[in-house]
Length: 312
Image (cartoon, rainbow, N blue to C red):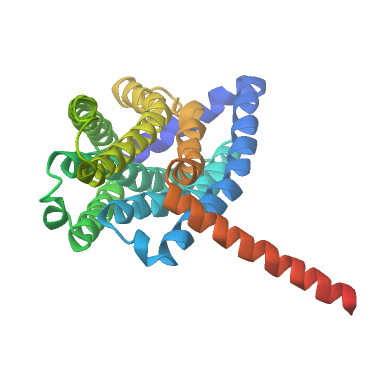
């Protein structure tokens, strides 16, 4: 398998030399755009994680799953994107270097993308449970259970990503199937959430003339529905970013061309890691307040340092 992979990559590179202007026109823009995504991924996800860490009120099961997603997005900026850029640029030079970097890039992609997909699915299930079983939810989904779920995703996908070194096509096919299962599960879950939300809306309209004591329960329902709709936006964004890569990977595994056509779509997948933290800040009021508080402290500290330097 290793020898055939090297031969395939060598043939691909030789054929690329004949069409180097086209190949360069793909690699260079992708590399530049990916480089621009690195500071966005790192800064955005560090802010979100710091905001959650500094505010005990945000230490909820849902936020723990959200932090697991933010950690995977952070590693995209710290590891996956730099390796991807180096791999893309090295593909124009030595085959041996390209092969090693390609394997490293695949390992990171499988690990981080599978964690993100499974975590988003777990978040959708968590939101469904919060709406469907409002009274029993605190006992059903605890912080400890959420942590165990997140840790299971990371450990399982770490093993899966290492297996790609020996069974590349098989693991890639498994990742595509996993994407389909996550997509199916999340679609079913959000369909159920939509029905629950519509049912609650009808109840609220029917109870508009009810006594004032009903307001607290209605507010809780509205908060739960708002969180569910927020996670649905994350889910839609993730599908739009991952779907092209899943389709291109399936074509690559099935027809085995001389180059990885998913190269054209990898940058789109990485965009999800840069977009996610801004979605958290935009759609989650508690996280937004905590992030703004951190930014104010950073800006005030910078102003004080500038004043001190000016006085000196």
